[in-house]
Length: 181
Image (tube, rainbow, N blue to C red):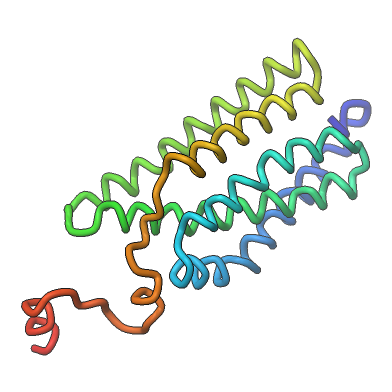
């Protein structure tokens, strides 16, 4: 969008967007992990899904490179949360089933399908209706995902207090005896 009239501006702009996102992920990752263990997964997922529609709307309000790069911080927040919390949710849901690897492997597959669908839908909207409608349409889809998470998806962390203690969580007498050996 910004480099439409100047193709040479595309590479530095895209590089800045990627770098900002990665920096935010690196700076917030430890906090996200600790928070997910202490307070649960759902509040963080709601935050991650909540910033996506906001980001989509903010993109429609400016064409200034600096502002657009700053908006990318929201992408970094969402990606840090999704990268850490989603695998914790998989762990919570598959614990004791022996299906962690298949579920964890399915996760990036679904993310890839979602990214491809998002790019495709966004491109079709841009071609027919323009950038603003595309960003607002994708923000609307993100808002639907937020609502689905809010109303239909339960918290997966069974006991936030137990999770914040250090060391392995031992649940049964048999596990205690095995751990003691």
